[in-house]
Length: 326
Image (cartoon, rainbow, N blue to C red; front, side, top):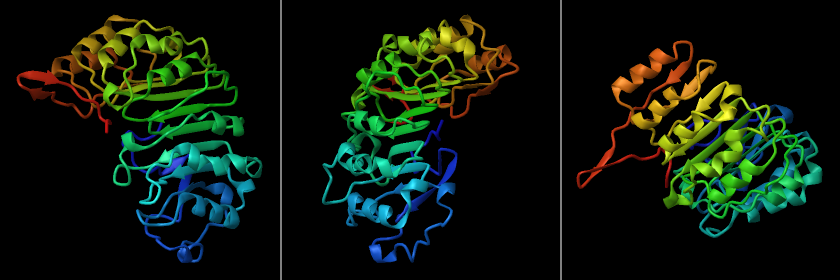
């Protein structure tokens, strides 16, 4: 699981992120001398990100990365922001194509993230994603994979025998991607995090789209399940309350969404949750009474009920909202 706020990653694959060239460097002349590239290549997750709106292109920076850092020693790699004034229409596929072409130079790459872009650089819903199949096919030994953004996102439904952690951060995860993930086989996956989001930002999944996940057949090792940032959190909670996957989980995460008393009551009325180490519900719309009921019912469980929200009121009608949208 990564931080709920969609900011630049501090760590990936268990390693601190080192970004080249970094936000403070506008000219390639500053790199590497001004940056100071670490010699202990294996100790870092390496991020290549454009340095500014009018800076050099991501492809130029990636070429310099290949020149100045030995890719054979890189275990974790992050594709950061690629948007400049000259390539606003560039997609993720355009950006990861050079990495795919150089795949044989990255024999030890096990942790990969694409789209490490924070809001001040480019809004999450503006990130032009792509079908991720070529990238995943090029690196079949990945243990950890993550992507941010969801416009035109694609996922190939198949077996992923090596993956341990998978995360999608977005304002709305396309239903076809949710179904493809739910229909895939992950024999070793321990952590699955989906920002389901809203229909207005490419989401709109029904609970039925999650059936393959909640049934747990393709996820025998799953211990953390995050069905986060959902506009239909109450319906998801009702389905989770009776889902087979829950009995093997250590952490159930329904945070960042629209959860209200109805959904929390469904959780309490369903199968026991006392085996959990943590129930994460932060950013919620629960009454004080319901929060007390949850704490009392789960005395040995860490229940995160922080970030209580009040619904918006439009012409007398209350509307709940998710944490991450545009």
